[in-house]
Length: 295
Ligand code: ADP
Ligand code: MG
Image (tube, rainbow, N blue to C red):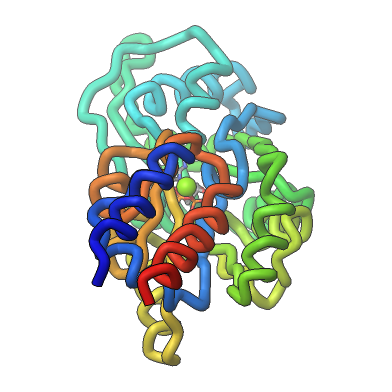
């Protein structure tokens, strides 16, 4: 091989904000045929905002939000940052637990009482012994049909409210997806978020509805990548979260957003300093060009 060309490839990458961990990564990049994109923070900005808070019990809207923010202030998840930013009020808190791809929980001192507060998706609530009744599930489904990310808030084992959050698709997502197709690659969307919001984001980015996999846990993301590999595909996975790290490691090529968590960056082969999806097709095209110079 010609090490000079490989070094030129990695050097050119660095200029473009594409940090490649070792020249041999370029070889894997050449054969990739499927690009699995994480949704939140990869295809979307990850800068969410709270769109609505719906109380479903005797707790007021503000109480629901303040309790949720008290727990979420300790998480670095994009949902957590948005909830924490929506109110300045905090209660004393202890025993914080975070479940990547699920949610958070803690003990919150609300006046004289210490309450157990759980925030996250349905599966995380049920793991914490919170069951939703038929009416509550219907309300959740209705909220999600509107294409929003909805998290649930429970206090002492009972649902007290929903928090709806909105995210925006990155400006360059649609063009990046089109460029991936031009390179002969199949773009897919993979997320732990709900189906309707995932399909809405996919439609906006130009990803086919049948290439959307929603409601998956971090382990589920690994399984999706492995299933594609078992079908003979060579998979690049692009992500930013703690929840993406295992799937990034499983993929033939792992690509992390520069704004992503340390876990994602460590697991990946390539880091995109500018955190733009547009750098994904650029990175793949760059490595193909570099290797065609050598061969
Ligand atoms: P994505 O795959 O879109 O990056 P995650 O795997 O991080 O999403 O999360 C999947 C789902 O788990 C979220 O849509 C949310 O419902 C829930 N969740 C994860 N982390 C949190 C958190 N800190 N607070 C509330 N909900 C969370
Ligand atoms: Mg993400």
